[in-house]
Amino acid sequence: RSEPMLTDADNTLTELDRFCISEAIELRKLRKELTGVDWRIDHIKPVSKGGMTTYDNIQVVPAKWNQSKSNLHNNLYFTKQEVVLNG
Image (cartoon, rainbow, N blue to C red; front, side, top):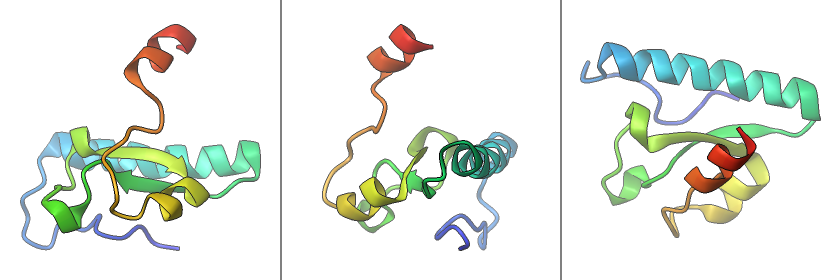
């Protein structure tokens, strides 16, 4: 499955955005390989609500969580506190 809205049709992505998207795609694949669970690249702020495909608005999340989220909220899957404590 290709990732939705990760194209750069209007050529506005920065080099950092492209790099982070590429890394997120690889992380999604690695997490699937390690866990057997489907993962998706999610826009934290949904595109339908003005979110952009930028390095600071994407996260790799379980597909099931992403589907239930739809465009209903802007929650992070991993909070910054969890990343610091567990990282």
